[in-house]
Length: 290
Image (cartoon, rainbow, N blue to C red; front, top):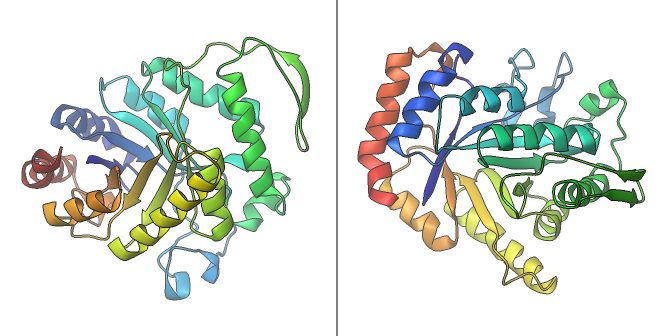
């Protein structure tokens, strides 16, 4: 089982300390979420907050994940660098392709692009992007990204994006490009991940929820004739995470689990506490499931 964790919630001054030690200990990946802007009040519209959404604060700092991953790449050698998740239809595909490939080249091929279509309508309105067609646009963007990362000359005449022949360099380090892991749990999101992604990125799901979602993904992949192609499942597990939990998720078909080695509250912990949490979790769990 691959084990990764979010840097979100950690003081940015500690990013390098945490990432470097995680790299040394054998954690597989580090991840950053992202948003461009928040409305002044979110209320109950947040899909992962639970009743009342009181635990989502629009004053929460949000950092550019590609800048953070480039920062982390400079002090690490092995750990993969992921976005979890990047809101794909908020940007022009050229911007996304350029940012992701820059991190990939700087890190010698360690970039993972977890993407979503967005859940916050006011964020789209604020930046002038269309809300209603964001799912279909995301599928087309994924097609454009793969072409930019693999073809010598690219022209595109799609439903939402049109451009004449262009050149795009550098290409990703991996000949297969940068993996796209689509998030979301609604029926359209599952279909989109199965169709357009190299994997699915879940947030926090019980074993029962994860098993049901994986079943739906496999069914859609088989229907599309993609059942024999690699497809990576990433899931966050509600704490505490034990070896037994990980084995059960692995048996259900999960390839990567997102964990919080140090536990909350992340932002108020010292670098020493954060590193200690990484080391303890690596000793108690990571070493037994790699």
